[in-house]
Image (cartoon, rainbow, N blue to C red; front, side, top):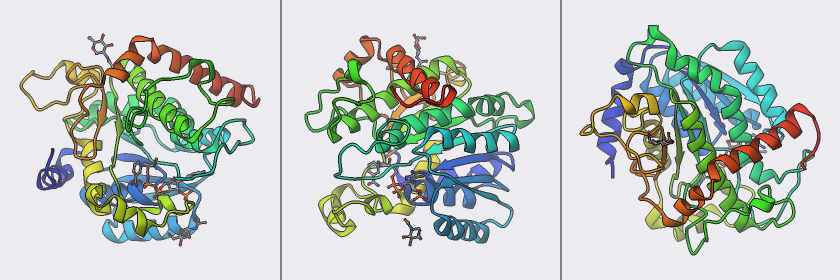
Length: 346
Ligand SMILES: NC(=O)c1ccc[n+]([C@@H]2O[C@H](COP(=O)([O-])OP(=O)(O)OC[C@H]3O[C@@H](n4cnc5c(N)ncnc54)[C@H](OP(=O)(O)O)[C@@H]3O)[C@@H](O)[C@H]2O)c1
Ligand SMILES: *[C@@H]1O[C@H](CO)[C@@H](O)[C@H](O)[C@H]1NC(C)=O
Ligand SMILES: *[C@@H]1O[C@H](CO)[C@@H](O)[C@H](O)[C@H]1NC(C)=O
């Protein structure tokens, strides 16, 4: 475990380690873990440019005024969008691409907890599945040119941060008896949806899509992170109250401010280098083991405490089935159908 003082000491180095003007996008940044991480970034860096993406205007206004008071040199922008539609993801990304030449951090948490079943969007996918997986991966695909440009910017010296962090749960498919299997005949769960399968597919597909990205884009590092229990707005649409949630999960709860500090650590620490950086690093340096078991390989499945999960037999079996390629192919097909051809899926 990386203890909290170590996390805070690292974060306190960011004012000198990163050059002023770091650019960060927080998808889901109006609330919860992404907001707490954005607040920590505002506190610990010099003149950051921070984009928040979500739907709630009043939450965004209050987040922005808080960040302004923490750091008057920050540039803060709210991009209002319902990203359960991939078309809207594309419009928001187009706005960012028009304004920025580089992107140092893409941080993503959108989603919600529900006991309701499949809820189909006009594009033909389940809303929750889109927020946990498809929309996030579309952000990655769209913004990769900016992330790559950040890594290549030679004016940045040692502060060429280029990182993607998706906060969900790399283990959701294998916890509490989960088989860890992907249903390749129905990856989008159009025909065989259950809430359990939806969580498992979003988790496992996220794992392997990001692992594939790390192979293809060696200048950027990719993290899939598990936050443990954090008392956020996550339960606003759920019958379970946050009081009940907090009691049930008490031993696993992380205070929201600590969660922000810890996710800022995950988003900036040298423990999680890109594949290209990892290749240049000496074996004895404190670098995390990548998701495929190779140290510093650019893709990491990280737990709430800053440590990567130990290898999992079920997930290794899924990789051996060719999950990296199969998931990428399916996801690209979904993107093509909806975003380029403007059709519903399938
Ligand atoms: N908190 C926990 O205990 C916990 C535990 C395990 C895993 N996780 C995972 O961690 C992630 C983050 O959780 P959190 O606790 O930070 O949740 P949260 O406080 O509910 O934040 C979720 C964010 O997603 C945004 N969002 C939801 N639907 C959207 C839509 N259609 N379009 C645009 N934005 C949308 C919300 O913004 P708007 O309302 O402004 O749209 C909100 O800012 C989730 O994926 C969750 O599954 C959380
Ligand atoms: C928007 O955010 C505010 C402030 O956080 C909250 O009180 C309100 O319930 C939210 N509105 C919706 C529709 O979620
Ligand atoms: C990790 O390294 C191995 C060996 O170099 C390579 O085969 C594998 O594709 C790499 N994985 C990633 C995610 O880069």
